[in-house]
Length: 360
Image (tube, rainbow, N blue to C red; front, side):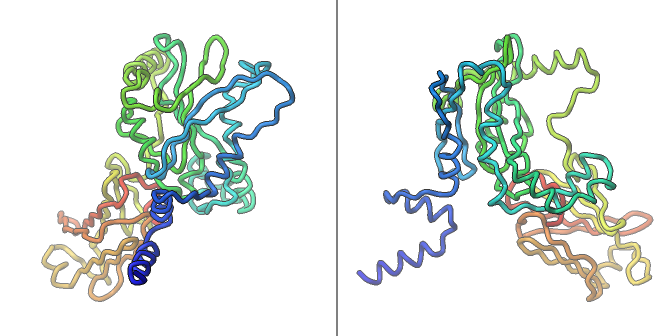
């Protein structure tokens, strides 16, 4: 009997934190996580005798072992229709970055892209970047756009604006919902998200979005979403010849190669894999002009879960520490033209998502 207990204890030690949490809950153990405490925090509100409307919205955890939850926001009747989308402010505490690991290098890089210049962003201090992230930045993604046929009522996903920069896990359930709403490929959402409904006309106000009724794959709004988004896009195209993209393209996406390290290599990506091209025209001052030359001189490629090593003639040619995990069963081929030979390396991603950059 003692041996059985020791075996069970040892097996739980090998589990990830999420697996251990699910294992305990399956056995009736009540566990309160930091996420649970944050959820309680955003549901607290001071009541000074005013009349309130209760507005429902839904929490979608990134951890698929956790259920979706129906939450309620109290909205003062005197403020209804006056404060815009109140859910954005209401959720701000949940997305506070104080207890999250923030990738500052990636934040600076994304800031530089946003402003189109490297002058000002490079001067922003680390403290300023952390302070901005710590405020809890809420971003919305419109699953259903407001059009006459839906009486100008939208359905929005509310997410952490810097979720990717915190390296939060991908929220596949939110992505699947966007896919069913007609977004193909689906946008990528990081970390825990919320979903709610907003009426735009005659005044802007939050309205109920309920667990079960509205989260079912057969929900009426979801069945009509694709056509209503097409209706919105058609109207937008009439007034703009260059409508905004849903999300900006990531580096290496759509077959457009991103060159790195002054031309040492370039790369492209899809959701599923990454492809790296390394020109081998000049190595140690010698021309490499045929695939035979490359093979004879000893090209080697080694794959690791988060790293790639390429060597030639016993010397390191390239070391890459990947942004995320890859399958170690990668492959490479040689591409020859009249000018040079390139090695093309293909790695399958562990998680099917676009990377903001190739290196960690």
